[in-house]
Structures are given as structure tokens and as C-alpha cells.
Length: 108
View 1: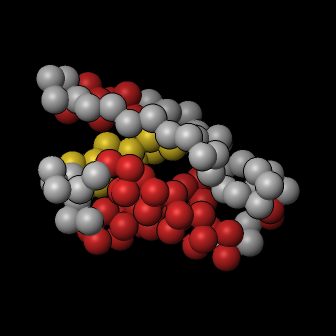
View 2: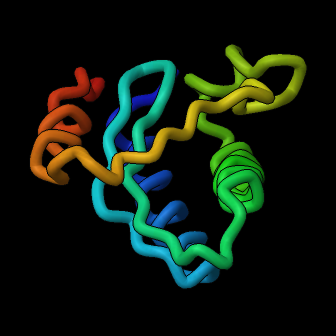
């Protein structure tokens, strides 16, 4: 359900939310049904708080735009499922993680 235009809007939203948390959105991309973010955030920020805000703010702002692709596919009125995956990449080179995120099949 995510189009390139929707993902572009999400990118801007995620950057703003990260800035509010004193974090940096290093890399972002998505496919038609999920997104990947590489975020550098300070230790004082709890990952659950950051993800909660990223999902909540993006859901509200994207749904306000009333994209027809999304209106038909919301999960009981929700943009995001309640789950998420967060992983630490302390030992992996950032170039490999960036390459993985950039390799997503971004919709047209």
C-alpha cells in the first residue's frame, strides 16, 4: 500500500521525529508493506519511545493526507501493526547496513 510518494512523506516525518529525540535518521527506504530505518540515537532515548513516536506521528500525518491507497488497507483504522523489529548493529559496518536498506524494492 505504500507508494513512492507516501514513502517520501514518511521520510520527512521520520527525520523530524528523530530530530525531536536528538537522533539522526541515517538511512530510510521501504517496500509496499514495510519500512527500514537506520537511526543513530543517544543512549538516553529508549528505543520503544522512539519507535512509538515514529509510528504514531507518521500514522496520524499520513492518514490526514487521505491517500486512497492507504484508506482501503488500514488495519482496523491503524496504519501500522503493533509490532516492530529493532536490532543493534554495533559490530556491523554501516556500509553493509546502508546497502541492505537501499536494496529494498521501493514501489513506483
